[in-house]
Image (cartoon, rainbow, N blue to C red; front, side):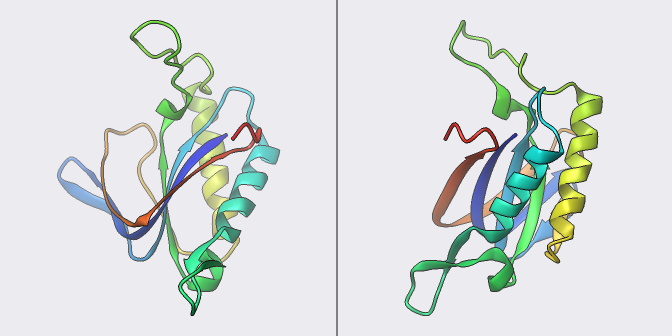
Length: 149
């Protein structure tokens, strides 16, 4: 399971000209689900994201977690995080989970994130979405449950 995590001052998702989700200060999480991912991958990433100390403390150092900062979370499914561009010019998505399996794991991810008592907003799985965000810092981190980066 892979995530691109961005610290934001605001973020939102629009589908068909209608805003379906929005958050204030917090994290925008773009989540890719691989074909071999399971509940352990979810638990690892949820815990990592909820407890990442990337918000400023009183000295301006990144030392406060999302939970402690009272931040919001926006989770957006993004199968393209499993796009393999090493071959030809068209990405291969063979390592991405099939849609039905990915959707179930995505929902489990959101449920587990909500158990950390964080306000969680979501996009719509499988929909064409416009994601608008203001990256604060900028701060962007890559997480992988296989710990490859």
